[in-house]
Length: 313
Image (cartoon, rainbow, N blue to C red; front, side, top):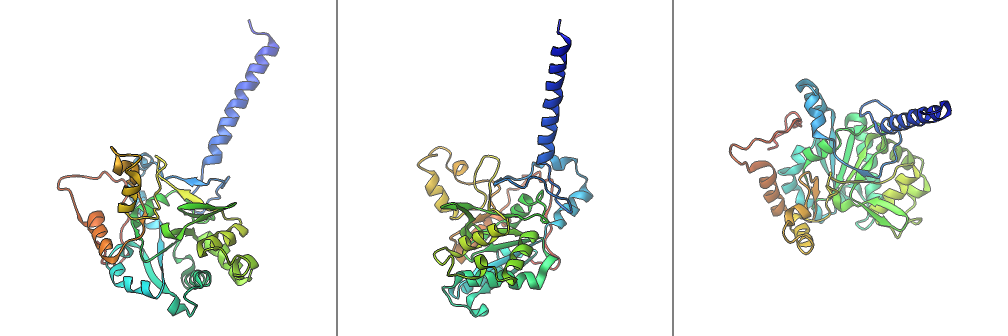
């Protein structure tokens, strides 16, 4: 028989355990639109659980698909502008809007990548502002599957300061590498824009961080605004923002995964691949959007419709 003191102890332990579990669960809940995210401390982001969407009505799914608006910004050097002909016919057609920005147009030095990046972000934010809730910066050699990007962002609240992609360490600094593409939420864009306008040293003076690449300098600036880099991966821990082409990733995966090269190499939900020529982008376009297995039905619970007037595939 348990004494009164023992019973009280057990009761207190049980109640405490339940409260702790409840607090833990609530601390992980984030509201995507208009809500306040709690405990925004995560560093590795994973896609939403597709099973949850099975309980959402078709009308709600359609609204969800339309709610993710992505502006794609292609950061090009003068020679990279030759890619634009191929890019206009490939993946950027799936963005809600896509623009090419080169150093020549911005009147900055070819080697001044940080100034170029700052001016591009400032220009597009002042031009579009809240018209888009996500800003995606990529190189002209990058191929992106925009629908996978939108799916990954589905449960993220753009009113919170997200800065995500393929992260790498540089000393104590964690930054999102430009080779994999950089995604900023509208809130991150607002904070970054304020820092630029206020001429904050960490963001404006290249002499302070002159030995950093432009994507590392961006991380320093955003960190000053309280925004940390976050790594995107699938449920098996595989990168979804890739800094290499599929061929490069397969080559890297072969020594460690000789019997499961593709599974060990690439995520089924990959967002980006880098290091592609215009011709290879056309091949990727064929494989991702045009090739169909007759009779095979993909049981996708959500559809991301192209923007009005788009001629995408």
